[in-house]
Structure formats: C-alpha cells, structure tokens
Length: 532
Ligand code: NAD
Image (cartoon, rainbow, N blue to C red; front, side):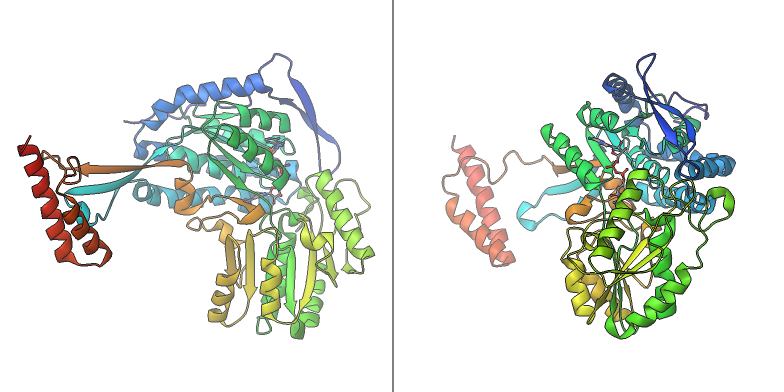
C-alpha cells in the first residue's frame, strides 16, 4: 500500500466563521505590524477535531512503513524550503537565521533518520517471559495509537516544538490537531505549510491558529490525548481539563536549569558553554542555563572569563549578522526586567548588561549577575531571557543540594574533568536530563528521552519513550487452548494441598514443588470434571 503522491492537502489554519476574530503580530525587531491573524473559535476547533477523527481509522490502518515513507518526504520539503522557512521563523521570533536553521529546521531530518530506524523495532509486538507456574501460556505486549492527539505548542522554538511531537504522534498512527502559539503566528503558518506539503490524507494533521482561547477549546474538544509544551501555569489548566475526561496528558513545562562548575573543570570550556547555554535563543529556551553554581575556588576566574565572552556577543536583528536577537515576547521581557531589577535591589551585582537597549524592538543585552541568593525571585522562578545568574557555592555537595531543592527538574549540567565524578553527580541530580561538560546538546540527541520532573512536567518525548508516549499499551496473553480445563479453574475441592505446594514452590524457589503442585492441580481438575 502506498499513499498518493505528495499534493498539498487541506492541512492549514482553520477559522470557522467567515469573519473570525483577529489578532495583530508585532515584529520583535522593529515593533512594526507583521499582519493580522485569525483566532479559531471552539466551533472551528471542534470541526478540525472531527476531521482528524474521520481520518484516524485510515491513517491507523496504513502500514507503519507507508506512514514513515510519507513523513520522510519532510526531508525533501525542508531541502527545498529551508531558506524561506528559516527567514520567516527569524522574522517572527527575532532569532538569528543561523539559529532558526540549526535549532528549528536541521533537527527534523535528524529525528526522522532516528525514527525511520527505531520505530519498526519500538512499535513491534514483543514477547515477554512467562513464569513456569503459568506453563502453557505466552505473554505479548503491543501498542496501538491513542487516537486524535491535541498538541499545543509554545513560541520559543515554534517550528521544532510543533513539528517533532506531531511527527512522533503520526508515526504511531494517531492523527493530530495542532495549536501553535499566538506569539509566533508566522512560524505557525510555516508549520502548516510543511505538513501540507507532505501530501498526507486530509484530516491527518489539522492546524488551528489562535490564542489561549483556541488552546482551551482544544483541551475541551473530543480528543483522546493532550500534549502540551509551555508554562507551568497553563500546563496546570491543560492537566485539569484532561483530568475531567479523563484522557492522558503529557506536559513539557519550564525549568530553572543548573550548571555546576567543579574546581577541576576545564574553565575555558565551561565559561564558553555558560555563555552559549544562557544566551542561545536569547535565553528563551527551557534548556537554558538559569542558575550557574560555581565552586568557591574557581568562582572569580570563571566570572572574569564569562564577563569577557558576554561582552563580545553581537546583538541585533536577523538582518544584522548578529549572534543574539531581541526577545520574542514583550511579556517575557518584562519578566526579565523584573527579575534583574529585584535581584539588584536585594544586593545582586550586575557585572554587564542589566538594562533594555535604547532602540526599537525587544532588545535586552547579555546580562551577568553575581551574589545571587536563594531568596531572590531570579533564583527560584524561570527567567527565560539573556541573563546568567551565578551562585557561589562551597563545594559540589552544596551545589547538588541547592540544585535538588528546586520546584523544577528539567535539565542540568556538570563541569569536571573527572568523568566518573561527573557521572556520579549526574546520577544524583533530580532532573529529566543531565549533561557532563556540555550544554543544549542532549535535547538535540534523537535517541535521548526529553522531559522533566516536578513542575517541569509529566511524560517524555524524543527517543523510544517519545514514540511510546503517544501509544496505548496492550497486553495479550495466549493459551494454546488444547486442555479442556485450566488447573486453577473450578472446582476447588481437593485442590488446596496442591495449591499450597505450588505456592511454596514459587515463594521458596523450588522447581520440584511447582511441578508437583501443578500436576496435582491438573489431576484434581480432571477428577473433578470426570466425577460430574
Ligand atoms: P504558555 O503557557 O503561555 O503558552 C503555550 C501555549 O498554550 C500557547 O500556544 C498558548 O496559546 C496556549 N494556551 C494559553 N492558554 C491556554 C489554555 N488555557 N488552555 C490551553 N492552551 C492555552 O507558554 P509559552 O510562553 O508559549 O512558552 C514558554 C514556556 O514553555 C516556558 O515556561 C518554557 O520553559 C516552556 N517550554 C518548555 C519546553 C519543554 O520541552 N519542557 C520547551 C519549550 C518551552
């Protein structure tokens, strides 16, 4: 079976009424309007879900190899459109075109490669071992799709964080209704364009543009699972809506990611990484370094190196050949200003940056703060901006204790030249991902599951777990069906002694007892039926 040749399908922005409500998108670079976009209302959302539901049986029953082949067309679409897509995403978010290409688009073929290889193994039926006490039976595990999955995406990586979960859900045979963020509606259209060009059957991917009201409508619609990436506050609402039904719900939420610098770290590399890890994507990443904890003996040298490197970062719009763009979202810039200002008033030192740039757009410079204490907002709450707060710690033990005493647990990193020690510390951090001597890269590794603990979220995507998240698990037990009676079925009379024999054999690990007891049960069963 093959799918039709790629012809644009109906996937696209759905707005139900002839004149939907509109919202305006402003450029984060210039502040000028980039256009008006429709807000899909609950009627439009329900209609999109109905189309996805109608498409579900056909897509579910399409062989996995054919589904994979259809999704693999994405490789060619990206080869042809990467330049256009990257420029649009950059204009929408303000990020450098380099980042739009590398962190949004280039990761997609990387994950496709991985899933083309792994999905047939991960999704195949597998046999599990069966205990002797259940001799004659076999156990299997297989997976089947959840159905229609509602996916709600954020604005910080608006292409990657929409496309990867959608692809993962589609591989398993689900159909999807996607709600991109209203902060980045142009990138939302790029995502819709990408899926349209795959030529999937109508209804397999539906994209509904709009704001929080559209997202809320999707959480109330007739979907079988919700996959949400965004803030903790909205994540709570999504989880509450899922609990009402109840349907499964996966949450990929915020972080306050730690960066632990040990005394034996390669300080040059650690400083370079702290700068990159806190300023990449203008600090608007759930994998951003949000708390650097530096051991006292190397603290001052580390700060010196970091400050020098931060001051070399070129800030500007996508057309200015810059390293770092503006912030994407005005509200997020206000959070950054509030955190930096309140830390300053509480005694933190601002070694560089610390004030919005005097130009149009949402530009905030690379900012380095020291003398950070746990009672400050910037220590506890996610900042999500180009700010590196540094905490001086006595030793690694203090860093581990502080790292784990957090509401969040998404990503962490450890910097040491002793790799065994690095792994030991990694094991002790209560976090979904930990890197040793690296930043950012674990989220780009397609074989590694991604997700958080505590308020950082529930569930995992990426890796094998990322496919299984979108699947229901089915246990299958098969008996050969030859015997007329199963030894533990009725009647029970005359079986108690043999049952104890089986129990003592299983609990005491005595094979002879299990066999004797089992034969006794069998005989009692046959006698019991013959006697009738
Ligand atoms: P947000 O919660 O404001 O919005 C996320 C999405 O939810 C948007 O599409 C929005 O329209 C929608 N939404 C708003 N109200 C809703 C409601 N009541 N019901 C359903 N949907 C609703 O988050 P954001 O500002 O777009 O994203 C930033 C946050 O996302 C940060 O906290 C960041 O750490 C987190 N994030 C997490 C990951 C991860 O993988 N763990 C990745 C990226 C971003």
